[in-house]
Image 1 (tube, rainbow, N blue to C red):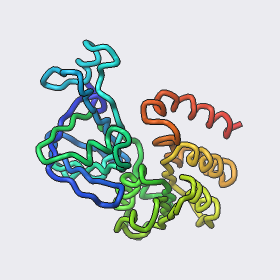
Image 2 (tube, one colour):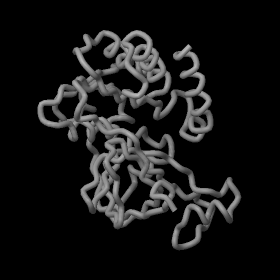
Image 3 (cartoon, rainbow, N blue to C red):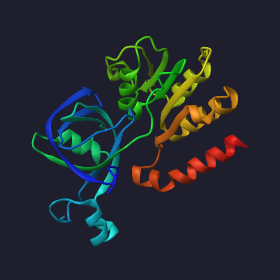
Image 4 (cartoon, rainbow, N blue to C red):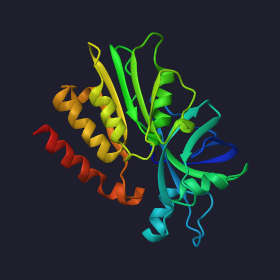
Length: 263
């Protein structure tokens, strides 16, 4: 069984509200490694209230023996930090909306969270002349991990879009974009479009709302002529869709985007 599909369990050690709409949940996990990627992610498993699952919890066994409508709900989250014992996951919380956010808001020390993973595929190239990172709250954990992994003296242009100044985090070198009621993704697209690109080879990380990502991918490929292999760029979510709906249509969305922009 690959690490990406292996089911693991973590026990909540503590929680912290690090911004008005973001809660950090720290899990104690044994036998876990994230590998070299700064965008490592895990597939969190949220059991359905009316289903009794076998112990020990095994996602493969559950999917083999239970009908699909009884499978746990899956939500994908980027690892904010792993120190060999504690796993940090930051959750965006909008009241009672969704599944993962409300769980994080109510999590208590000792609670158990099952997950599969990790996956991942990006880390900032230390040989790049400069780095471009852009995203919203959903991409913040990966961006923060990437910024912390940059070699000393690295040149990075980092843009993160949030609701307002109260949502900023204490990580140096970040340009914070405050929506202040504007449509999600608009400020991010404007910031990258207006950026004066430094000379040399750029390594790009752009993730967040799918429509904004689509606009930025087109700009970077067609107008800035950034090679495809120098970009990690994908939608983490899409306005108007929960993760189930987004994941169901993500491949088709990405395929259509690539065909349109590479034509």
